[in-house]
Image (spheres, rainbow, N blue to C red):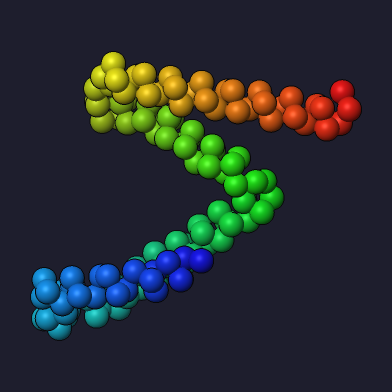
Length: 122
């Protein structure tokens, strides 16, 4: 799926890259062809591939809604850690969004637990 998404983006990105002169930039930067850069780029590509593979596996074992909820709820701890590590300020609006996200996650979890109990006959 990722391959096809990237393939579909090429007709949009190639004219922009040509217009901005990025193709000539590639030929004037020898460090882009160094073994270190190519190795790190291959490593990053393989990590991305396995991340996508893990995501597709998670969707196959759960359902798309659960995957989407977990994906959106993981932003809450990241936001809170950002406040502590980077001394970011949470505005009233930001705090409201965090609380809404948490409430939505709790409601979703409660509904899923109730559905599981009803499915077991309890």
